[in-house]
Length: 177
Ligand code: AMP
Ligand code: ZN
Image (tube, rainbow, N blue to C red; front, side):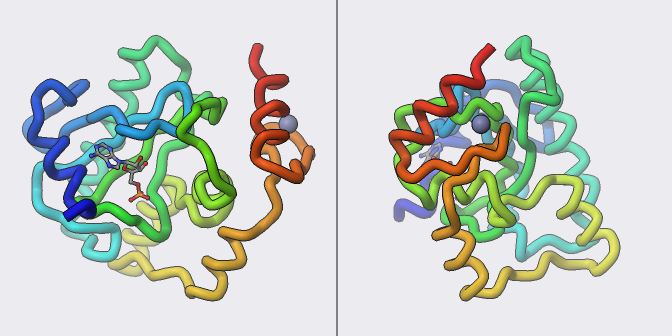
């Protein structure tokens, strides 16, 4: 099933960027920025909604590999977003490590954009804190999720609001140093 694509990729050594005993980093097959990695645990944890406090050490390891892969790419960590989709589509827990340029032909829809730039993206630290405090990760309300998916195309670097994806993409180029 398409939902299991990450599990297939995880097992393909040619797709692994770095790994440890606990987790693996792969390149996202449809990268939404110049750099887009996914960090997956080897343990069969299907999603953020299956996490308990017992998994905090696994999350620590995912975060460590995120730092490592950014280092290997020769980039600065401040230029990356590190976190989870509030509504994951693929199974096996995966941490997104994505560069903030968001310049990629695979970024095609409003839903793509808003999934990384609104509350539909949960920063690692925020999710970690929620799990530590409450022992689980709460699902976002479906009405709120729909609103967020359809919210205006706000630039992630400045106050610009684009009317269309092509104009957003043009605008993003202006932020490249
Ligand atoms: P999510 O919305 O958090 O479930 O994100 C799933 C991510 O997996 C997306 O960024 C996809 O581009 C990516 N993806 C889909 N299929 C594959 C695959 N077979 N191998 C690697 N990455 C994939
Ligand atoms: Zn801007």
